[in-house]
Image 1 (cartoon, one colour):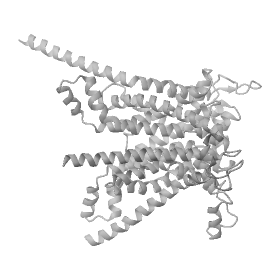
Image 2: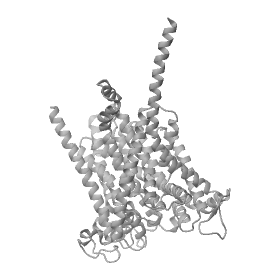
Image 3: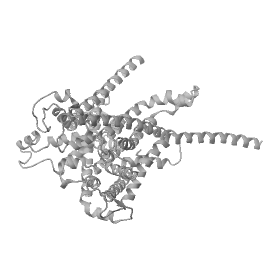
Image 4: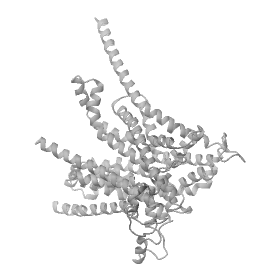
Length: 273
Length: 305
């Protein structure tokens, strides 16, 4: 029995990682392409390879519209992330820790924005803004992004709240901590990894959003919108530089975090011994 | 004696009720800012959309001018005119969902189960699934367009190897649009699957093997049911945005592959026909909600949030 099952599992042992490797190639091919063409000595359009240059990386704001759009995207991303993470975390704590009426309604209200296609969300918000005679622009983009990020924050943080032992907060209360001290000194630090994951998710959703943004942006450009609009007349290589730089930066930040966490785990294990 | 007991009981009950009231007050303080936000910027806009979907355009009026009305024909006209785009949206989204599941499940299994004892490798693989977001999916879709273009290296090699007929093209086809959708929504499928598989207790798989179940039976009877929540939320997170997407079909397809999102976008911005755009949006939202409700009930996971 062991031999046959071992052999069958070993087939799976090599097949699966190979399959995953192919999937990663698929995922990363367009990024490799974008990265490569960020070094292209492109003239007007960045479609054919015309020689290697570092000029685009040395002067990423050579196409000023690219820089402006990236700055807008970063500002919108940070604002939308902070607001949606605060609102969503509060909701997640209430949903797990407290009983209240209309719970089903609250759950439905949180689920519906996730179950609505972006084009509908975008069209509905624009109809509302036109109705209220609000000119779409920077502020309306932030409002829209917070709206679609809240539900994702709630889902992410809720999982973390649910995995916490409520006994810890009770223990803090037994040790004469006030409810607010118990929350900030015990519960909140334990929730932080979940909140950080939610914030990262919210930022990436906001930074990468095109459809809802396109409906509610007026004349304001975000990075994805700039690229989409520029696609018809040729994308400047600086856009490739920005896309690649953001990818590398995200990679660097998360990998550093991972390495630090691994080092802390090892230190904790050593201390435990 | 009884009177004293009743007094004590009611005093205690009062204190308990007081505590319960305080807790529910805290709950509402925590909930209301976010929920009010959603009412203002989700519920109200959808209500406005519903209202506008019955309006009529003013003949000879200014661009985009509408008048309040109850014109149900907006719906029937739209469905007659755009039935093919509706059908295509649902079909493309369905194929893309099945493909992302086929690619994402083994990928998530490797990350969540095989790499479990190597946190650094696991973290790195997870980042590689998420990080593409930061390159912007529009830029990546355009990269695919270039990679699959008629004169590109990939296409030339495929043609030289006779894997592709000499006159075939990959861009501007339904194939390219579905491939683009599959590519762009793969992370949305992989992450929920990973969340499910990460928690999978491998001892159950070992137990199943000890009880002489073949790997296939083990997968069908143990692994699959345990990871059903991940499959359900992954397919919803893929199917819903894919059905409303218009970026892939406008960058990788032609007018012959246009989806309902393309029509809504064009009706809104090029034709400036708000009532039709609104009616199409309402139908898309309603159609998807019906499908989601049916799917969730069939899959037996009521607890999505």
